[in-house]
Image (cartoon, rainbow over all chains, first blue to last red; front, side):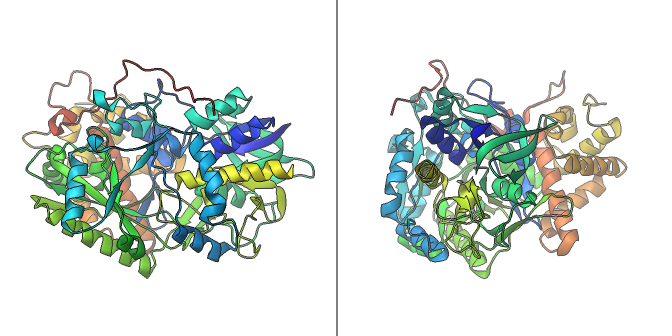
Length: 460
Length: 147
């Protein structure tokens, strides 16, 4: 029997595995997806989308007005994200404290955990020489309208950008091992410490026994179970929440599944006479950084997509679609990412399938509208040939569902990361977040996971 | 011309996929029609990873589409594209999922650059000018520093 079964291998799972195995615990990591490495990533967008994301690349909110992207491979979302690393600010932590009553939700108390998280990865603020033409246009537009901006900080090693490496490739896994995913940072170290990894292991439910917790699931189609003294859920907002919803024997309150948010994002493209080639080089090197926008509840990003994702986002069909796609090299894009209210709900349907209810509140809708209007004005200041607004929204930062709090009637997990009535079952991922922060959540997930590890080791 | 090489699609479903693909991507003077590239041959690379329920729904839809003229499918695409947000309830959800699901399948295959053996026409990826790479001449697996 293992000391710990860790469900999920993304930002949280890797960190927890590293901390627990470093302390001498025997751990097994259960990952639903396959294991890839730098030399075996599928490479083609067609293949990595199908093989490395849940739902072969698309999951929907009920009503299908919003689609979600969720990594499914060893390393989870950290393999397929852009490795942007930001700390929560006072605004975010104050909101969390008010909602949860958890007193360590403040910059001071979380500082050592951010430090530990950052200590396990190489971080770089992206320098001016790595800005591609799309980034320069983004900056020019922001400056035209007096909107503040800053360089982004990314977890990366050596991208060989001087040799012309294109970051777009790494959305399907970094073939240089430069991206500081949980796989190359914490999981690799945890493996050296004796971590056992089981991939293609789909967890169905967990049973809390007297002196052990049993994880039931299937691995490559074969039903199987794993016993451990304790279980740490690190499968993200959808994964951790749905496993708990399926674990009918657990005593869980009505708050489970509530409080889901996802930073809904909407893309706008502009077509220019000049070639932009926004897919070349380092993309997303800068972002808006302005107190006015922070207060307004949204930020603007300089994101670009590979062709099929662009084609999917573009409105229109037939010849209109082809005309826009033929101008692929002339496109620049900006996206609004809103800080949405945690009004979403994760539940199961009658057949046990996961249902994501994600209503847009009036405030959410206002933020989307304001952000898109600002983007239209920003692009207009650059005098493009055409501006194209995409209707399809996407949620990438999936948080909530197992919210942390001091009050068992209003939360799922206590400040020691345990389910309120099951002290041997922990949750350590983004599902803990009491609300969306409006800030990239990856680094905070790692920092929270580090604190979880400390809490577990301190109590055992 | 038959593109049936997949193991997950029947010949009729391949016809349905090519029809729905041509309705969405009819081709023009630069870009080839969806069906001409033979990219439907590579559908298994996506279908294999779909949930069983989603896959069965998709196969049923492709079978139905195989009986419809491309003009009707093109109208269906345009209609969904312009009005998909208006429909409430279960019908609206179904239409929105159908819209993005079908569009996702078609554009993923077409803009993959994959074609049928022997295809000699223009490659969509080359026409739109998409080419990316990562420098790997000095590749070494990442070794995390001791911290």
